[in-house]
Amino acid sequence: MTQHLWVSEGMLANRFWQAVGDSVYRSEATRDAEMISERTAPLVDKFPSVAGSISLNSASLIWLTTKYFAPKVICEVGTYIGRSTLAMACGCASTLTELYTCDGTYDCMNFDDFKELDLNKDKLDAINKIKYFGKTMSHDMFAEIKNLNKKADLIFIDGRLSDQDVSLIKQIANPECIFLIDDFEGVEKGVLNAMILRNNFPNYIILEPLFETSGQREVLAVMVPSQIIKLSRQQKLPVNM
Figure 1 (tube, rainbow, N blue to C red):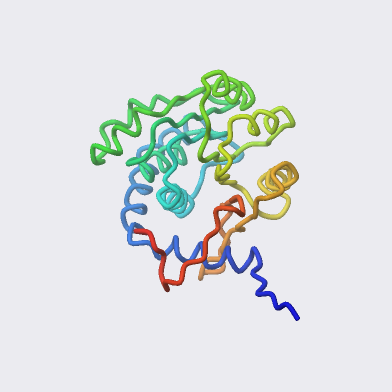
Figure 2: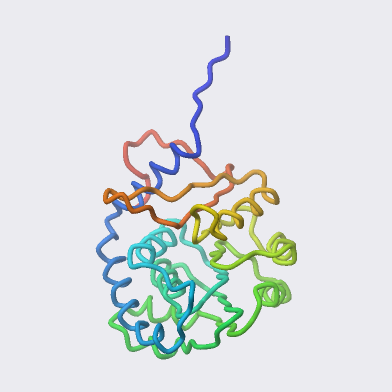
């Protein structure tokens, strides 16, 4: 009789988020997230949004997740006041070559304004690699990336995906592209986006958000292609996290 060791998405999600949260970079991620939040705070009043911006803890988790996967090319849907954009740029500063980000509603960002932050040279250089598409729909940005013959290693989605978006994502995403999905809870757009992506990328698994010890659930989910999952015999991650 053949035996199987079944591992659920929930089991993987719990271990993944625990490893990310226990990272040796956690203090650095929190420091950068706090600095970014303070620097962007005036934009919240100047450009109010019903949806709001990400929390400090979400910014820290985004920083750590991009550090973990170390992408070269990132695409982001939903810049708003740039907190997630800057968190990703800082998190993977040592590997980043381009970060494309768009917002369909606002055109309020000048990332040159953040070059005075107390950041190291790699992170300041990473901010220079941000390509901002203000008041630009996601499918228009994706089309531009396709025309540039660029392939995304990580796509962060904080907006509603359309069929046109998905068609273009299939053309610009690397085979091992990672998806980060915000607002993954209840009937929020993140859950719908994940279902749309899962229908179009059937080999992907979803690592749902993890409950915090305070009982407050985070809303950041990760989707990864199953072929990149590897079993390590080590008790800790075999990478410097």
